[in-house]
Each structure stands twice: as C-alpha cells, then as structure tokens.
Image (cartoon, rainbow, N blue to C red; front, side):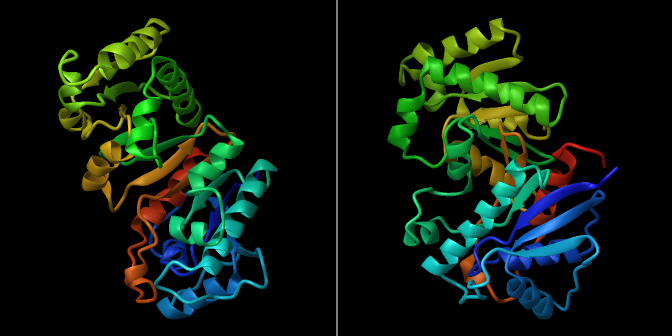
Amino acid sequence: MRPRRVGITLGDPGGIGPEIVVKALAGPASFPAAQFILFGHAGLVEREERSGGLTLDRARISVRDIDSAVAPSRRGAADPGNGLASFRFFEAAVRAAREGEVDALATAPISKHAWALAGLSWRGHTEFLESLYPDAIMTFWSKKMTVALFTHHISMAEAVRKVTRDNLVRFFLALSGSFERARPGTYQFVVAGLNPHAGENGLIGREEEDEVVPAVAEVRARGLNIRGPYPPDVVFREALGHPGKIVVALYHDQGLIPFKLSSFETGVNITLGMPFVRTSPDHGTAFDIAGRNAADPTSMAEAIRLAVELSPGPL
C-alpha cells in the first residue's frame, strides 16, 4: 500500500511562502506518513534551506521544477513575474491532483495583486478552483472554530445580492455533503444573519425574513442539522470551542475577523466540494518580513497535516 501523496506549492517567490514550506517540512512538526511533492523551483527551496540552516528529507520530499526560466526573484513586494510564477506552480499542482498524481494539495500564500499585475483573471486560488469546480467551498478550520463562507472575494454589494433562498439552499446542501465526504462526523451548521441583530424580525433589513429563514427551513426539512439565522455578533461566541458546530458566514469579513482573532497561528483554509482537498495557511504573503527568516510556519504545518489527514487512501 502506497503512502498518501500531497502536492505542496511554494506560493509567491517574493513572499514568505518558500520559507514557511521549508521550515514546516524540516522543522519539529510530525506529519502522518506521506510523500510530498513541492511544485515550484529548486532554487527557491535551496535558498531557504541555506538561509535557515535546514535540510529537507529528500527520501520523502521531492521538488518539481515547473518552469526552469523562473529563478529566485526579489522579495518584499508584489511583482508580475512572481505572480506568474506562483500561478504556474499552482496550476501544475492542480493538474497533478486532477490527474490523480497527488491525493491532496497544500498551497503556500500567493499575492492577489501580483496575479493581477501578471494579467491573470482569477483573484486567487479559490476562484481558479471554482472555474473548474463550481461547487468549491471556502472553509476555515481550527481546533477552536470552524467557519464556512457563503461568499468570499467579492464586494459587499455583490455579496448581498447573492443572498437568495435558492442560492442558500444549494450552498447548504453542497456544504453538508462536502463535510461528510471530507471528514464524516456529526455536525451542526449555524447560520449568521446578514444584518445587525439578524434583521430584528425585519426591522433592520428584510434579507433574513425573506431569504435566509425560508432557506434554512427548507434544508432542515430535508434532514440537515442546521439552525439560524442568528445575530452575527454572538453566533461565533456560541461556536467557539466547538469545532463540530460550523458557522456559515454570509460574507468574507463576517467570518474571517472572528476566525483569525481566535485561530490565526493554527488556522487552515480548506477548499471543499472537489474530488481532492486543498488546504492553505490562513495568512498572506507577509511581504514586510520576507527574506528575514522571521516567518512562523505553524499555520503552513497545520495545512500540510490536514491535507494528509483529509486525503483519500491509506495512512
């Protein structure tokens, strides 16, 4: 029986991605048995090994050069060359996952600005995955809290327009199925309201009464363990310390502010709703500390661990 195979992308060469990948894999963290394939550039890996005085175990960790023309680049700012390189690393890793060459992906941070400078049309990892898998769902996991995002990298105005009964019903059903496939267990989904006080029975906005309440009632009738909508300023407190209680946030910052306050160091971004699981740390490229050997690899290590644990096949 072969070990699980996890693809790991190096992220933006100008940020802390290569550093935290090498630190995570060479550090004291222990991972379930797996083979790791680093998608990026050997020069980036060697640079971080030298900088940190680290050595990767080449018996279980291999490096796949995606584009030999992409050399280690300047660090500390969004750069179109780095943006294109990070996209190529990710694109190759996704291709390997779709072809069954790897069982799961863990992706180091990219810069959305650098992708835009490179002329790419996707805002980030999740949007690219959604172009291939429309049911892809952005979730955030930690031992303290679990959050699922109904909408993510769109404007508030667009997020509000998407809060309709039909959209919510499809999302709730897809979310429940995705959790059951990724990590079977007993979950309760609690839905945050869109408006202050969850609309106060229609006094502070009608979205809850007209769209959210009917959607929750419909999927409850189909057997989902789901409640809400609850006032968004208290629902996260109720879920804190209960990772089996999944908060459904209706827009990006509603979910990410409380999650990162509680779990920034150990939180993991997980994309569900695909044939393979993709994980990533819950932070960005940290251009301000790139190249200083000061980045904390804890969230990257947790992302790699979850990628192994949630991937199919034997441990």
